[in-house]
Length: 256
Ligand code: 13P
Image 1 (cartoon, rainbow, N blue to C red):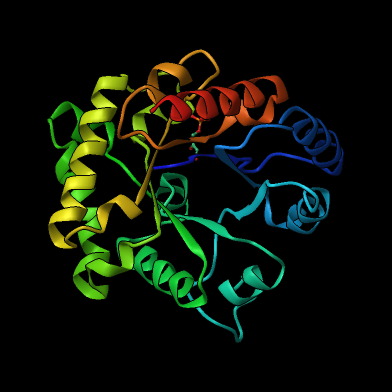
Image 2: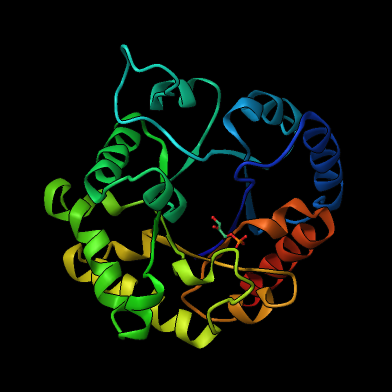
């Protein structure tokens, strides 16, 4: 893949102050960087502010969620058409925090995937195993199951031009990042799994890793051939760390 993809998932963090300072510093620091796509996914209330702040740069806008409905009486929800309307390009779905804390099932996530594809937005489909599945050696099985629930209903070609983010649940926010070689093995499995079902198209799938990524471990992760980019949580809220991660991604994938 020609470009690395680094997404900063702000989760439930941020403020107008962070939007203005972070985006100003980021755009300044990233001048001259060409081969890394950068996406900021702030809380929905700041999407418009981030959009305004990045309008003169190559940074793109991401959202952290979408509703399963197109419109109607669903208080508090945001549709894929609305996200597209304000300039969002990438939308994170299937994050384990939503699966666990908001009881989102595989079926709900598959529906969100469908709504995004229909609108021409890029799903960032998070998949990954629990700590127990990891201990039992069931990582690949868990990932395949989460891919299948979409593929079996919507077909394999829907995985063209999507982002799959492998985020082992035990690695998120714990400081215990998965080992780069382990991640490589899982990413290679995911790519092959999608390729087998969708001949010659898997190269169009971008596979990111997420889970306790920092500026210290990013280089070793990005050195792996099947790690196309990173989905960064807490480290993206620190401007120096985030800039360093992006620089490393641009450098590493230029060499590749
Ligand atoms: P942390 O980088 O804070 O572990 O979060 C990862 C994540 O969940 C990104 O979506």
